[in-house]
Amino acid sequence: MKLGLVGLGKMGGNMRERLTRAGHEVVGYDRDSTLSDVSDLSELVVRLGEQDRVVWVMVPAGAPTHSVVNQLAGLLTSGDIVIDGGNSRFTDDAVNSALLDQRGIGYLDVGVSGGVWGLDQGYALMVGGAAEHVAAVQPVFDALCPAEGGFVHAGGVGAGHFSKMVHNGIEYGLMQAYAEGYELLSASELVVDVPGVLNSWREGTVVRSWLLDLLVKALEEDPGLHAIAGHVEDSGEGRWTVEEAISHSVPTPVIAAALFARFASRQADSPTMKAVSALRHQFGGHAVTAAQPR
Image (cartoon, rainbow, N blue to C red):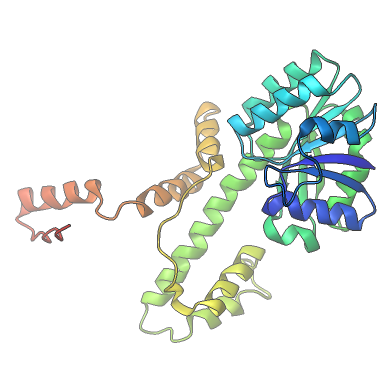
């Protein structure tokens, strides 16, 4: 197939390379002119021909994605298809789909998992949208996925990003559990080879996973993780997962706790724990630790 790809960063750039290796023709556009094949979206659309055009968008969620979709709505025509493969919130998909539908343009939302490893190992794809639009782009999906699978048409518009949101929420919980286990092992005076213990879990145990493999790799590169600050951002999906859990009355205590742990990581001197210390001192006379001067 021939398709346009908007956004050639860490994910988009590798996706272009994987598609090209599979024999597809990719016309890429990025604000960084050194990465781009064309000067703007108008030229990209022209390069794709006059009908049945497909444009895959891989830019940050929110305003950047909305901007690109709005521009494409004015450039594409009936029968074309736009794919949002970024980490957009699933509620944005209905808005994008309605806008494009007015012009007869199809819309698919695709949750993409695989990170920087996807170039060689393939990407898991969770797709939302109409079956006829999925079928039209299936050769592209087949090229991006691992040979053994990794593709699902999850449902209608929004289902792909909803599925990816839950996937990332689960990822929060898994990472937090591995991290807490690592800290407990490190705190023990009995265990003298923490990386070795984690490495031993990679074969034959029920906790083996790719995330565990990556933790072992990180410890091989930096034993003790001394070069890394304990500050963790969240990119939105964990928050959205917890919000949807509340909306559907579904208990997700592990994912919620992992999200809140990330919030705690950003507090060098937690106001909450200051209050706890003050209360212990007030009711029980417990000693308090003096604040460090700033």
